[in-house]
Amino acid sequence: KQEVTQIPAALSVPEGENLVLNCSFTDSAIYNLQWFRQDPGKGLTSLLLIQSSQREQTSGRLNASLDKSSGRSTLYIAASQPGDSATYLCALKLTFGKGITLSVRP
Amino acid sequence: DGGITQSPKYLFRKEGQNVTLSCEQNLNHDAMYWYRQDPGQGLRLIYYSQIVNDFQKGDIAEGYSVSREKKESFPLTVTSAQKNPTAFYLCASSIGGHRGWNEQFFGPGTRLTVL
Image (cartoon, rainbow over all chains, first blue to last red; front, top):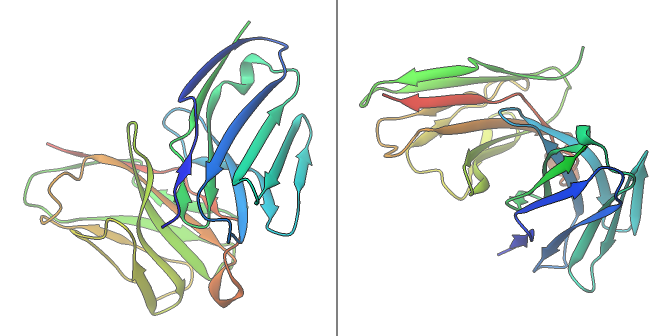
């Protein structure tokens, strides 16, 4: 059974810092990997989808990479802003990580 | 606007009552999903449906029931058999169907509280 792990559970950084959020998974036979953002009390917003045949995807200040051989994906956020404060979740098929709660300090 | 709607936003239930959560999408997606989110637990799959008139149990289906009579609708009933129903419920959809697992889009969620 697929397991998805996101460590640490929480992260606090000063504004302007570049940061990397990690996601690890146990089963490399994946269709695709999706990164989401969730604000408190809200639904999930899709950020990036990486197909299993792809290595990375980019959207604005966000870049997500996928390494199936090592069972890892990373979400890179460039020049972080207070508005980036939220919980970031990764998901493979129907299995979600518990998320990383990011706080960007002004 | 295309999207997924869930209603109500907040729902209160007395012990022993069944309640139904609504989920509607106008994205013409084949697949729809229900997840439950508890603090510190992440999202857990309750039921999913890849096509009309078909649905499958997820990891925590006990105490829940669903129907999929129309492509755009996937209501979730929380029955009295669900011992700890207080949670945030999220509905999602994707192109899915028999074409595989694709990008999921989520509704705004329903927060259910048992009184």
